[in-house]
Length: 336
Image 1 (cartoon, rainbow, N blue to C red):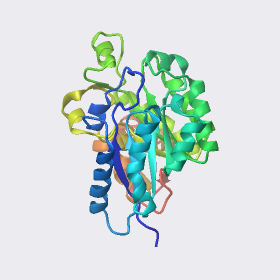
Image 2 (tube, rainbow, N blue to C red):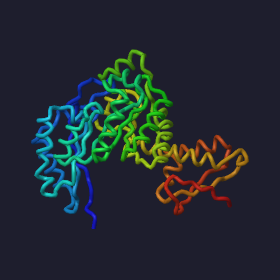
Image 3 (spheres, rainbow, N blue to C red):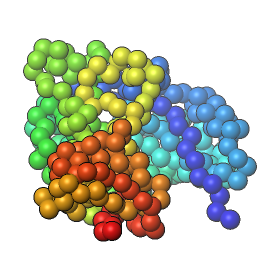
Image 4 (spheres, rainbow, N blue to C red):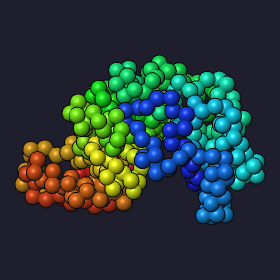
């Protein structure tokens, strides 16, 4: 029997970050108030193991910050706190996130020595102007070099991108996705921009020099991005920020923050497939679609938005769904 897999998270907000990106406040995003220390790593592992079932072998994940930009001795202290658990088989491996310009052969050798298996690169965009306006402090060339180095060193590679940053356009985000696909990562995360209180982006938005990237903007664009990644066989492992109490209670003041963004994007992708099966010849008809089990709500849309949109656009008398053994995101038109 294959052991169960799970994640034990440790948040290191702003740890190692050499720049203040316009959009960022890792403490509000992660809910963590200070960077982790070795004793915090041990505590997180012990508490995580206590919650898990006996046959679960978890991964330790360092989220936030730029892990490989902190001094090597601090990296070793944090990673070393997990080493006894790795050696005892209580942890499967370690994953962490960092910046593209904080990767080189020495860094990768250290990570391999301490049991890191997955490296996530916070690329955000492959457009130089977007990176400059967002104060990222690295270039698209840095990102491409780092991604290739991570892959060539035998690590799993996850790439993170954002949409709706200052200077961004849908076309630039789509091009970023195409470049990502060519780099062949093992997965991607897509984070539509959220305006977080007291960040530089908040000041730009409040001053009228930045137009927010709305939920609707994000849903439409992310649906197109997912088609690119799916076509390349690259899983999208996250859409949108993970909801936190601080963000939900007012720190996310504008932009594409929604606790169910992934579900909205999935529904939009189903809508495109449903729309493609209809024409003006269907006016006045009742339409029946088939989708895979468990996907009826996604196909109908949140609050039946897909049904409402189709009925209005094609003047339909009604839309219904049935379940059939179909691949995910496949829609069949049933003619009665």
